[in-house]
Amino acid sequence: MKISVIGAGNVGSTTALKLVQKNLADVVLVDIAEGVAEGKALDIQHSVAVWNGESKIKGTTGISQISGSDIVIVTAGFPRKPGMNRDELLKTNENIIKSISAEIKKHAPDSIVIVVTNPLDIMTYLALKKTGFPRERVLGMAGILDTSRFKALISEETKTNYNDIETMVLGGHNELMVPLVNQTTVSNRPLKDVLSSDKIEELLEKTRGIGKQIVEKSGSAYYAPSAAIVSMVEAIKNDTGKTLPISVHLEGEYNQNSICMGVPVSLGKDGMKKIIELNLSEKERKALNNSAKTIKENIARLKL
Picture 1: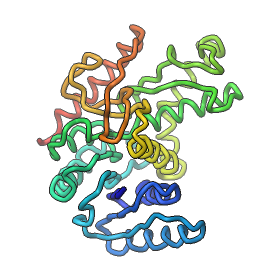
Picture 2: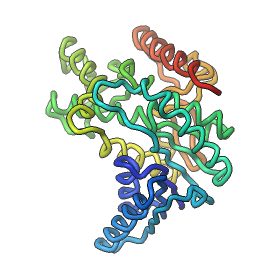
Picture 3: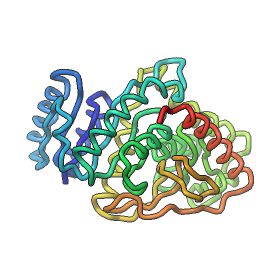
């Protein structure tokens, strides 16, 4: 498998490192900054030699080198700065995603695209429109990351191992994300039977705001985002059919149309296999509709 990672910043380079560590693919790391991708790729390749791995990686400024890629991961763009929300990046990153999408369409027309650039759901929608690819092959990484954060907070609060917690976060990758409390279990017990309603509400607020907290403390999250990206790659490469919360284009599912938003998706070798429609509570459905409304408002701001 060949995977190209566009953007050699913290998220892109960490993702590239994890891909070759796991021997998932040969990797092309692309960045417009002269020498950055090349230098990081050399360093990563030398690390492969330490553990006698098999994957190869090269860095380049030439985006045409993505030719023949099975998967293209887009992390390029400006990151959030302290005090910003993700939606404020729309104007900044719109032209970047338009340009990259045109290059993907030209050089890797059969690839599966994983969008990571914020604002995630809007940039996924933009990449879908500008590549013209079927919706099965344009995926946004967000819900996996948000779910991991909710799960980590539950684990810390309940002193429970991660593998004993089942949960999922849907909706937009923003402050209106929708953690599914009614679908969450801790050691096979409903979360509502384990924690008080006040404590659950506290964890929900922390989940929605923890990305901002990371930005303010260290500038950017990249370890967890890269882990989430790699989990998508593994499901695609191994054709597992694993269900993960991913931003995809909705065509009537969850009563939404012409929008990319986080929903449960079964992943396989061709990208999205199917969207899983969960039985949501009235409160969860209203929250999801509210999240969708904000995404649609931002999509309307795009210059398509």
